[in-house]
Amino acid sequence: MPHHPEVSRAGTTNRPSRFLSEDDQLLIELKEDRGLPWKEIAKFFPERSGGSLQVRYCTRLKSRHAGR
Image (cartoon, rainbow, N blue to C red; front, side, top):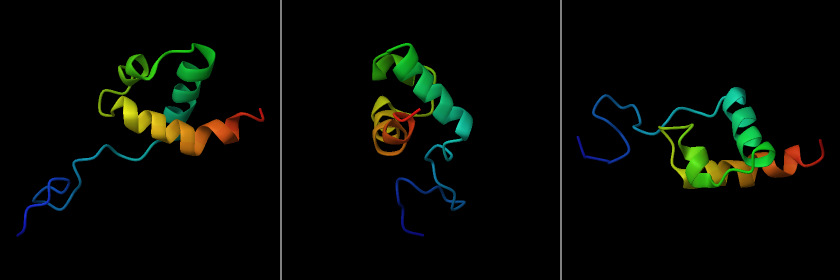
């Protein structure tokens, strides 16, 4: 079996699971309400990087949430 860094031998990915709606709400709260920097926000999501959280927020949440 060829080795792919993001796939384990069992065929499951080593990446974190999908974002839940609770994750999105926490991300919005931490960024918009508390104004935390990405490095601090990442501490609430130990399995995710600050960069992945920023991408999630900027591409999926920021524009949807702005009209609230």
